[in-house]
Length: 79
Image: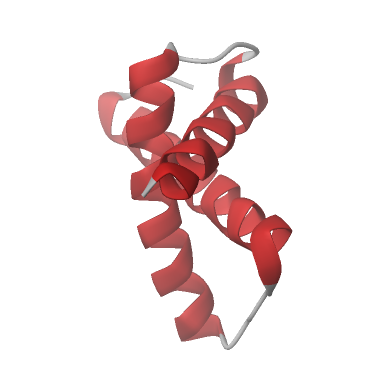
């Protein structure tokens, strides 16, 4: 449980830095990271990509979070 929150926080913060140059705050970083982990896991499964370990989990969550942020910005019309 705690490991998932830490991974979510790290992934959300990294995705925020990639997409907007700063994080979204502790709570939103966790939410974005956890959603990104779910989405990234689903996406990588469909693509046949598998990463192992904690670093792979964080990488999957970061990729998923970046894609989700990008899609959200695309829908809202902001680039």
